[in-house]
Image: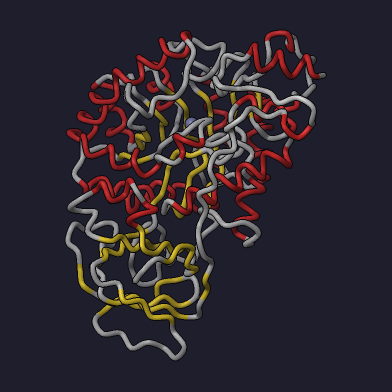
Length: 464
Ligand SMILES: [Zn+2]
């Protein structure tokens, strides 16, 4: 067994910690050092019947102009916005002068289970441990002001449920559940010596909802429906070559048109949509032609393909991947693939902006607690292509529009997300200063976020 685990770590070409070392003599220390990372976490949990925030400038998420208004939160919703609101008896009043009130941030491409854990760590442990890791990653995301995430692959159904029930503290989750991948596709994380796999036999990762290997229409339909059964708010297909995966060259197209359309039909029958992992241009075209409503990455898209997004009203959910300090640790095979991604980032953002595409913001942080900490810094990086206003709007108002594609499957039907308006969910951040003038404030939430509220509950409070 031990040999098998070690060989997994040694064989895998995925982004396991290069500094993986093993302690001897205790069963409890077999994980690579440094993989758990520093605990960031939120600092309080305060719930009041009513909260009044006074004196802040308000960015409502959609409009560039800030307003000066008081905001009354009652329970989990924003009840009133206006001048000189009278505080209900017993209300918690916040004097937020010098601060800007903005909607809680939304990460449209997140993996609660993969963000901070390494592949090695996931291979060595079971679902109980994965959930504890994910719970911590979620709490850390909340401590950075991310109050909602669209989880685009991974075993997150239980985390989403536990968050909504208050068992753990983290962002709201729109879970895709396990992504569907073809054999040898972007999420086939099996070892080569584990195939051939007998028909009908599930891999341990599949049993743990980590991913599903699906080949053929009946298989695709079954797995799509099983995800919907478990609470998926959208379905994720791995439609083309990826960077961190072991067997798929970047140029590949994954899923036949027939398989693809089967997933789309079953998903749309439930009132929601398919989003795809597609980096190379042909996989992006394949996704749009077969009915995806949102495409993740798309870094190698040509101008004609970007025009297809516009013509078909499809969301571009790209990440600001560059060859910089946020690049993941990769082996040579992966590095060669990653270059195609980083080479495309600048062109795609510039052209998408020019064409007026619907652009979502997401980080897609993988396998690194240190990178996950930079979630806000990755958002601030969007300044290369967009104004601070455009960037903040993307991570709030616009991302919330994308989430609306889940239609009747939204877990949060009481009001809008990603905006500060009467009737909206009370997900808000008080930023010391004005992030619409200085977006870098978002990079350091520990220092600059005076308050983080989700669902009317205050999870960080640091106002003098
Ligand atoms: Zn991803």
